[in-house]
Length: 266
Image (tube, rainbow, N blue to C red):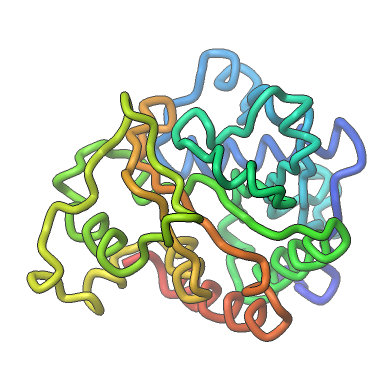
């Protein structure tokens, strides 16, 4: 049985650690879910793209599993202004216009590729990941976090999640100065069902655990969803000013997400 007392969180320091994080991403996204890997990913059994080389990779390590992916059991990819400049853009900009978020002079952090191996989806591991994120935000003086989040993986049927998209549009749309908009050729209308026709409490329970957690902290979403055929998913853009990520909020966020993960997705 795994002892959670020995787990620790830190940034990946070597190419081997980054590749191990990519392997657990592959397990989470392509084996457990229904994302579609490229032939190269399938051969190497790693999830990777051009942004990995310029990002910071936050990892949770279980020393007792050193022989299995170097003990890495959880990961988050974080891309700063400097990393995006070297990469040529943010990953999110392929799906959303985020230019106004960057023009304001904000120190921003793009979050993505979040995953935790199934046996470790507990309060302790999520607390570790988010304590690491909070520390990174503080050290790098980040003003704003954003990133694409999957409303669903394994289906690109907008009608199947019409309630979820509508609830996000009516109750969680970002203010105009913080609202990314899906690029025109990929824009999917989220205003499908009128607000008064939605049972907000019931619909909220249908969200994936990560999105539930973001919303509980007070995160907002951009205008328009996007179909990602490569990931076989429907995405929204999450936006969150970092003043929300105080110790108080981090604890609240972790507890709620951990409960969702333990109980299973609705």
